[in-house]
Image 1 (cartoon, rainbow, N blue to C red):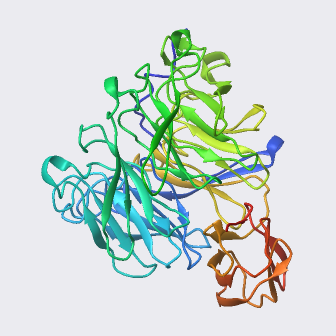
Image 2 (image 1 turned 30 degrees about the vertical axis):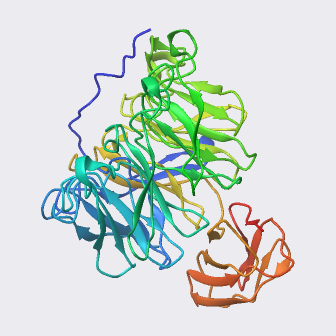
Amino acid sequence: MTNPCRSKMNCAVVFFCVATAVAAQAQTLTTIQNFDSSNGAEPEYTSITQGVDGNLYGSTSQGGSDLVGTVFKISPANQVSLVYSFDVTDGELPYGGPVQATNGTLYGTTTYGGANGAGSIYEFPPGGQLTTLYSFCSKANCADGERPWGSLIEATNGDLYGTTFTGGAYDSGTVFKITPTKGKLTTLYNFCTVQGCADGVAPYSGLVQASNGNLYGTTSSGGANNRGTVFEITPTKGKLTTVYSFCQKTNCTDGAGPYGGLIQASNGNFYGTTYKGGVNCVSDDGCGTVFEIPTKGMLKTLYNFCTQSNCADGANPQVGLVQATDGKLYGTTWLGGANGDGTIFSITTKGAPNTLVTFDGSNGNQPWGVLFQATNGTLYGSTFMGGSDGYGTVFSLSVGLGPFVETLPTAGKVGTQVLILGDSLTGTTEVTFNGTAAQFTVVSGTEIKATVPTGATSGTVEVTTPNGTLKSNVIFRVTK
C-alpha cells in the first residue's frame, strides 16, 4: 500500500478563525502565533519548555533579523514575542528548543553556525542576554561532534547531556555532556564504534534519563539492520548498550527510522515513534509506528499509522511523544489526516489511539515539534508550515486537563534543592514530598524553591495554595 499523503509537502494557505473545537472530545486547538519570517519561521524539531518566570520558550529554525532562527516566548496570556534572533556567529538553525535548568538558566542548541559553523550550545536566563556556551568542531576533525539536532536534558547530577548528528571519531554522531557553569564538554560516546555501525548512526533527537539513572535515546539509522536503534548509555563512563535494532521483522513491520526521542512513562516503560516502517505503505519506507519497549526487553508495536482509509489517522511521525497528566501519550504526525497536512493524536499505553486534530494549512501544516504540557494543563506545539503567512504556527491544545506543578529535577537525595514550577503559587502554605513536609521559599507566583526533607520517600510532590492543592505531574524519586 502506498502512502497517498507523501506528495503533500507544500501548501498555499489562507488564514481564518484561529480556534477550532472538536466537541466530541472536548478539545480546542487555538493558533496563538502565525510566523511571518520577521518574528521567526519554520519551527523544526522544536520542544517547548516552561521557564522559572512562567513563560514558555521555544525556537524557530529560520527567520528573524538574519533569517537563521530565533528564540521566542509565550506568556501566560498566550502572547508570543521574539526573544532573540541568531546571526550565524552565535548559531544557526536552532532545531531543538531550549530547556530550563535548575540553576534558573535556559540552555539550547543550534545545528549550524557558531565559531566553527558546526553548531553551538547557548544559554540565557529568562529576561537576560543570550550567550554562546560552546561551539562544536572545536577539536581537530570535529572529534567533539557537530550538528546537534535535539534538545538538551539536565541530568540529576546537574550536567547537561545531548547528541550530535554527525562528527565524532567516525563522523557518525556522538553523545556528550557539558557542565553548565564552565562549559566544559566531554564526548561520552562516538557512534559507529562497533563493526558495521551496529551501535547506531546519526541520532536526531535528545536523551531521556530513566529511573535507573541511565540515559536512553535513539539513532535514526545504523544498528544491526541499518534502520536505527534504541540505546542505553551510562552518564558517567559512557558505556553504551544497544537495546533494540529496528527492522528485525520482514518489511520493517516493527518500524524503521526513529527520528524522535523516547519518554519513560509512569509504568516504567519507554515509548516512541518511528518515521517509517509498520504494516502499511511500502516496505521499510512505511507510514510509521508508535512503539513500547521496557528497559530490558523486546519492542512491541502499539500502533501502525495509515491504518485508516487515505491515512486519515496520520502518517510519518517525525518526533516523539509526551505523557500528559491523564496518563495518555500525545504526539503528532508529519503527514496524513483528512487533509494530508498532519495530525495530533493521543494513544493509551495499551495502544488505543484517537485522532484529535487534523491540520488543514490555515491552522498549520506539518507539525514537526514535540508537544509540551504546561503547568496550566494545556498542551503546546508548533507546525513547520502553514498559518496566515505559510511560515508555521505555534498552537495550544486544551483537552480538559487541570493545573499541576513540575519539579526540577525529578529525582534527588535528601537535602537537594528542588525548583517547583507552576501557576498562582503566591501564598503557598505547605509543600510535601510524598506526605513529608518540606522547607520552602516562594520565589514568585511561578516558582518555589524547596528542599527534599529528611524522611521523604519517592512519590508525588504536593503544593498547598490558597486556590487548592496542586500535585506534581510525575513521581519525585528520592535517591540515596
